[in-house]
Image (cartoon, rainbow, N blue to C red; front, side, top):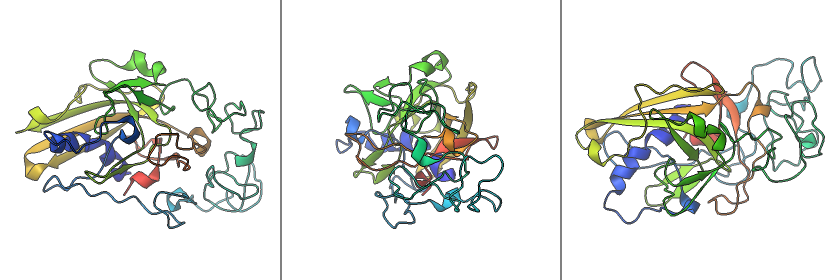
Length: 305
């Protein structure tokens, strides 16, 4: 998931590009991370990855990155260890109309989430559409920790810095923020000034450190300590090192992401909230490889552009 790591790593580069430019958007409706920056300059060109439905920002359909190895899951038969099996190896997300839709690893039957009963594969089920209470719309427990929904409030929220502003929804991570790591809320953003598109339906709590070496680093926002940052239990470290501006600066970004064992552990059933550039669209949080040690973490594969 190199593209996903880049979406966070280039925040500092974008901020450098925006220095003295009033064209950036600091509102919470266009508040967020990432993009890709060409190694030989500041031009930012990020095209949203097109899904199998052919709509880059609409109906997500079934993402090919969710294909699983051939085996019992996906054969249409309920085998040992499976919660469901709809005969395919893809996840139909929250806007599916398929009967019997099942997550790609057969860990949860979509239709049971929201029936107020905690069924197999679900951590909880309160039957409502509020992910900011104790149970998300994906039937995962919200303990305001790694990967849980979040938002930024106040005038300091920035499209170029997910650690800025007042972050709401990550209170469980507050004890883990220290001099080596900073609380961050990744959110969906579209910034037409720099061509930035990032998918993060309803936000995701994480910890971050960003460092810079070279001429011009005084203009690059840094946070935490990339040399000492470690990640608490329930998260995995993801590292990206990039040389930018023709080799003038090197930016290192390290982020603590939510780990997952099954697709049911990620918020597959999250709808973009009011104020999001993708308001009303279905998110695609998916359990995919992405940790430095090979851990699987909750990501939206559309960011891997």
